[in-house]
Length: 338
Image (cartoon, rainbow, N blue to C red; front, side, top):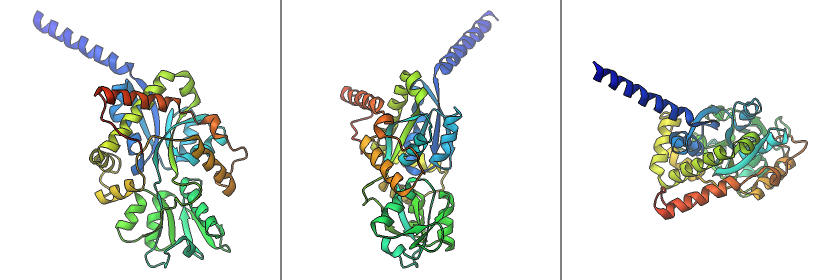
């Protein structure tokens, strides 16, 4: 009896200690999107324990939808296109951009029978895009480059139809639009299923390949610097792991994020057009800001200066830590950022 009592007490003590250890992990609330190239950001929660973190992920429809949750104090870190972060910062959302996590990730796709083989062929057509996102910005930049005018009403060279990402593929399949500026893997899906053809990967303007950014709140950056650093360290490892292990990345994205809704080919085509990365530059954020202002994307009265809110010190420390771990043979391997 005494032995059973001692065993029970020991088990209880072990459970209590385990519970204390679990509760000691710092909670980080993550806002994310459901796209293939956002996979490494989602994967952070799987390895968070190594960094004494607990990451709670909340998935939003669009990057700009995360901004009210940040203002409400419900989100500490978020993944979004740079343009959404810029628009948020311009409207007073207290965020810093601390890293990039993917680049590219967009295509202009047309109906196979629409006779659209180039951007110039979009004249007289209906083209869908989400309002205020990277897809709108790159579409407008391409139209301007080719001398085409646009409006969300008829009467211009191109009629813009604003739609959610999730609705555009069905609209293209149904024939209610002629083309779309779509993200990944949805654009690859349209092509692989035969109801879309690629017009262009729209990276030949001044913007180049749009970068997706990891942002954290100002309070998180200033008041919890140690937690913020561990978070970015975790992000760099998650990203490096996906770059080094594409089979793992595919399995995680297809099974955990999309629950089998995308094929292996969809994933591979998507990541081929939106490779994982962790780099970001002040220059790219400033160019994106200037182009948003030029085309009226985000409707910013006071566009922010990139140098004031792009904070890359955490990323540089995280990369240095990873490089040292690789040299010591304790990391996941030597990986170059894309």
